[in-house]
Length: 336
Image (cartoon, rainbow, N blue to C red; front, top):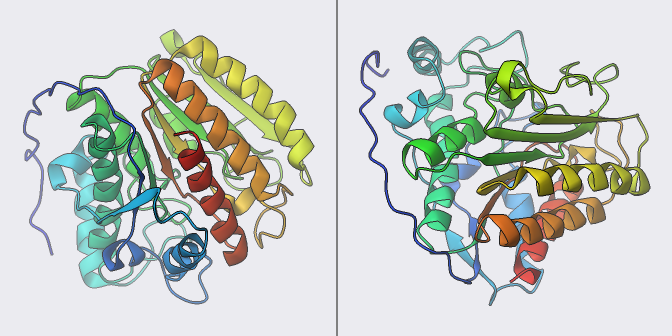
């Protein structure tokens, strides 16, 4: 069990951003990253990492990708987004190894603190690799845990790696305008409400209508609060929506991002929006993910110096996650 962490946050120093260079896409792989999950029969099982990497290995991209090793977030890193009390709670319950971190979706498995810290640390490693010019584009399959809030777990998500990454890009790398783009079937509520009043966090989320799917949020009327009103775009999709519907929604999303002119793009590309997922009701094919990734690379080249990090997000049909995430990587590669 970790010792209490209250007061352990140290000031981060800003670093000078190097110009990114065109290099192989960096994809993260490793047993430590694969440990994030909850075992059978939980939908977020421990096999999702290997299913994706098996598909990627057969895609003929060996000369265009390089593998990065998992990272590990420090308590100071976690504190950029999460509260000290919540981090202590996860540490304590992870050591005890019983119960739930939320109302019944997210088990307090033994070792879940370290596994969740690895997810965050790996996303931060991808951010650093991009910001230091080691690669322009990176992908972390077991990441994009968008339901976790600053002081709670939710929906299989313990620590919100994208939330930490957004704060890290500001505190360490001196960026302000971060675009978070989410095409997971579920609304990225942990990101939305954590940055609802933040005008510099550009939020674009295409998701199944919350009247039909957890977490029941993300209405199109939710556009941010206070000074941030109008900086958040929620696009709801009806059950059964397919690729043509996604194309129309994506046109709105892309126009919105063009106006926002972000400095960095975080892309949550959950595959539970593909047809055949056991817990959602959308009917995309993996082409939707390929098209979104291609468009985001184009926007990243135009406004962000090419800088984009993709995270796998949800997806509970193993064939779907393998195909969709591989198509995202292929699109990153094709974009150069």
